[in-house]
Length: 503
Image 1 (cartoon, rainbow, N blue to C red):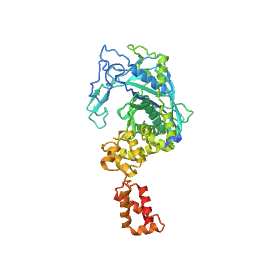
Image 2 (cartoon, rainbow, N blue to C red):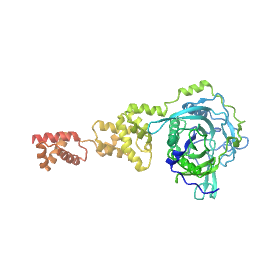
Image 3 (spheres, rainbow, N blue to C red):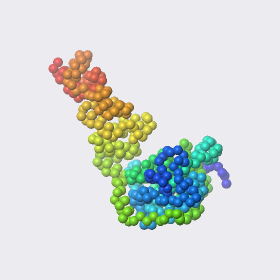
Image 4 (spheres, rainbow, N blue to C red):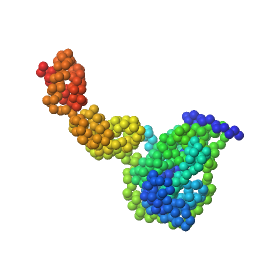
């Protein structure tokens, strides 16, 4: 058989001839202070191999102790995903050799997860709702981090040597596994992205993780298979590992659909394997042949007792759950009066919390959206940062809008005030004072500026006096220029008309 790679099939063509089925495994690092089975710190960014204990290094005789906060967080996640919470569950040893797992086994949960049989509704960009069924959510520990030095790809192939950092080994994880997601057709990539994004939002709402994908707090393994028709048996799946951005999740699904269609068109069979996602080229490449559960030789963890959360404790946790993100978005959209497209833009920009806090600081919802989705969004894009990372707070935007509402600054001056706040010059009030930006509303000063403008443009005065009010704008413009944009344009117009009539 030829070893050449079959050409990709155009996505739309692939979808017209094959039915895609996807499944997603999401790993979330829990935001506990210590690791899953020992007291080592979980703080991000420490020097390599400084946050380890004999347990996380797998030294002989070191015994694990379960992190109770991690169990509570896992139950919260399970409840938020409408799962059943096990009355009794246990840990198992998942046996395999990787250099970043110092024990040569991962402590995980196999046939007795803490949460199972759940579902979550996700909302696509056009408002369509898709229900995703959750098979299980189980607790486990993270592996360490390999760094391959030398070579062109940063992967082990071609590297001169590899370094291992065990700081991450033992970080508490919850893995959430969907059942096969069927019936979504050409929207499979969008469904995958929206599902991972919905989970990320839930993790943050529950306050169980920072859920920062760029730090690896949330990682998705994306399974894709094709079948001839929706009635046919499931096809052979591939699992693209450790995809860590929403956009990449969507792109990886699209690529795998096109790639697998090419394999099938060439008369070959899809290999059940893990695959690596390459962000720079937008393609996946083969990893290892995918192991089945029996290959890991699971057996019950003898050093940990079973976990038996009482029903009373589970209900106490349920009572503390916050409003879920989708329900919250719908409520806020109604309260704010935003159109569907406006709300989608706000969500996609990550501006919900910023606008909510700005409204709480006294700004009208329309004004809050104008600032965050307008001037500030442009600034964030120019500087290549997230909105939330700009050096301005919702409270300051609320104060700025109050200055506008009070007539103390106009829109043009308000943008100058905002520039001062972003430059670190203080609060909006302080910037107005320091830069002298308050609107000139003193009639004496305005009268002098108006008279000067009228005297300089006698032809315009005659047109206005003849009943043509269009040229009033020229006088107002001259006054605004003379006052450096600080005049109250409405009051200037009144004075101009009064002076012309008197004249």
